[in-house]
Length: 252
Image (cartoon, rainbow, N blue to C red):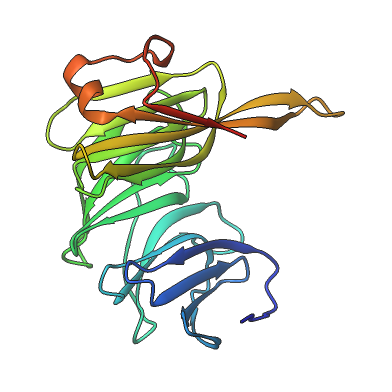
């Protein structure tokens, strides 16, 4: 089914953990919460702000949005809304001078979030148990600007795809950081998959060989999906992807 609505721009979409809710945000200050089996009658939250990124809690009660404070100021806030009442119940922003609008929002249980911001190099680990007193548990520092952020299924590692052909893996149980560098451009898409036979988590990274378009920009013309054994990376501390044998590689 399809649902058409008058948005200047769809800024983000998010599927709930149980796949029952589809969330969409637009550049006209609205967040829409769809039932996955009924796209024609969404719940509409009017934020009076500009939502640029969204997520929903595992229990589908809270909607998290990276927003601007109004249409004139730069986006610099995480807002939390009750999905049932549509009310704003909490907000947070960092005192860091380079803090911009959140572009990656990840949940860890009911009381924790991981947030990274546009063109930022930090990952903020937040305690949101008290929506009136949100605070930082820890801050993780990446070596370059973060494009895409992911969390493993076991909630023990953060994975950051960075601007300059790098991926960094942060252990949440220690201070270990694994940096994997590439000669190819890294797209924003990557994830973790579990090997059911070996019971090991593997890191899947999508890279692309670029060609130049008429304007001099990069255009991917060949993509590769490369898999790494996370346990091996942790045990050996290997960091240079060129020195590692691929677990598996697929090209298109």
